[in-house]
Image (cartoon, rainbow, N blue to C red; front, side, top):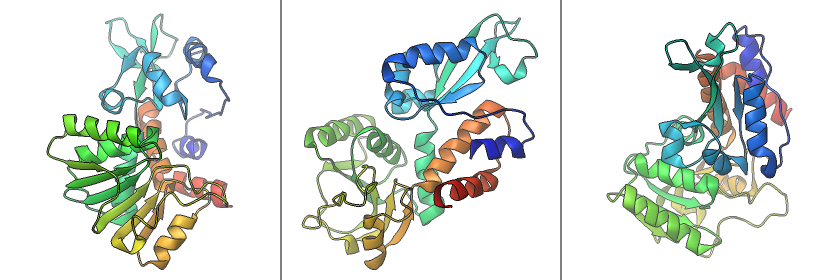
Length: 275
């Protein structure tokens, strides 16, 4: 996806993947900065750890408490911090600037893939871990009317509910399942990645036919058991490919300063994941 985007923009850059143990994350960030990398993406479990390891936090990273994108910046002769792409020669001082592109990607995918209007919506969210917490906070900031949070460990759902109540007191948030229908059921758990995984939804607590739309953050397989059941129940459905695409496109824009070629990146992503 990223290399297809870079090629379309005519940039002689390369996007590479590295396995980094969490214990070595700080050293990896410092090493990339020392070698004048233009930026990094971070995935689980690095997103939360990196908050304490970067030199500066964008408002997006502060708001959601996680860093998935780093842009390396240099200080110019006037003392201003600028992206490294703007320097002909490596600057004397550099810093790692942390951003979060996940949260906006979630809501953009819900709007574009499901045609969902979030303001005033009633949403059931499965999972209150890293991705679930970010989704819950972002949805609350979009002024959904009601939010139900279900998590395997109920204390985690309660903690996120409390955080939302403090930040967005006008949003009604409840740990557990709703009694009535919802506009969206959103799966932010990893259940569905493996063929033998149990459903993330307890059918005794909530029937899929009571959800107008179902979004599963999982994108491989393309159709999880949850999405198959939701489609059979008459729900509009979408998987997490759009979320993956939009967070990556925004990261590319932060590094390059150019508009991301989203459709080219989408085609590369679909080819890579689905063949």
